[in-house]
Image (cartoon, rainbow, N blue to C red):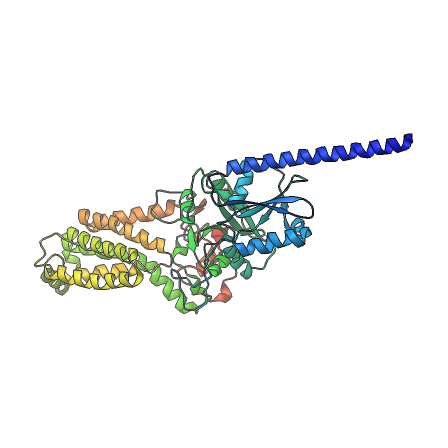
Length: 488
């Protein structure tokens, strides 16, 4: 009898402890859910849903604006009802009790599962916000080669690169930047090729940035540049996966940002701003011709209209006599000096270009073409500008669009005004001073600590085979000197 009483008392104690434990767990669970609801009370899209399972009651917490219903049904609700083991296999256990850290997982598209009996908190990545499909690029279109382009999805962009480089040494470092936006970025590089000094420098610059919000990778580019006051872009930006793959294999680093279509290539040289990936798909003769056209076109676009000012204001003797007569006849009704005449038409072109880019595509094209013709013709007939200047300004504007990177087109437009003012004040002497400033400025620029004028100064002999003139592919086996890669 004594043994029976002892057994009964032992069982009673166990049941009593179990009941107390369940009550304690229930109280703890209710408190956790209450704290989380209070913390997310102003987030109207956060859903709390209790579901009874074979183990215990589970509270499913997710953001309805970041997860669609089909994803929740397939990944959460059906496994909870039928295959609970699947949840434990794919979920990540959250050990932190910090409400801020838990909330950050919610706003990144993860679903939280809180098991009341065991006080276990799990997290499953169910982010399924709508994204744009892979389409052709409109800014870097090519005739030969792949036609796909990056999207605003970070995962999609990385997969497009990894589909081209199936190498286990291709590394991907993820970071979160922006105190307010918590934007995800990824640094891609090939571990056995990349220069570790450059990689460490890039990491330090990104980690030491104190900026609240990032909406595009161009903002990050400006914050990590060596010389932020320079008008020249110091990193290569592209939307083409084949371009990124080429630079990765050359030992460069590529930065992607979530919600941004462009990729950032580090480091970069001035000459590479005029190189397109299509050059490697063409014959070497065609590629060399196009490269020379882009390279020398940059200097022509900043020199054509300043030469017009210098010749008519200070140095008419440099022009042939017949051409000088035509110019004087063309300007016979123009009451302004050449400097104001050029500035007037340049500003008109800028207005047409900016207005056309802000309008719908079809309307913008019509405004650009018709507006340019009508305004140009009316200005010539009214005696405001000469017809020869119309030809020069139109040619200069076309040449500014030759570089494959649009940022270089903007740079040429800005630099052209410096040359125009120099020519208007001092003629050819002013142009030479401006040109000396331009070359000195380029020589002083760096891209991630590497000279921006590579491979010109300092140069590596093999780099000259893939510079302004592109040699046949059989000669392009060594990596560029700007990468300073550890292995050939």
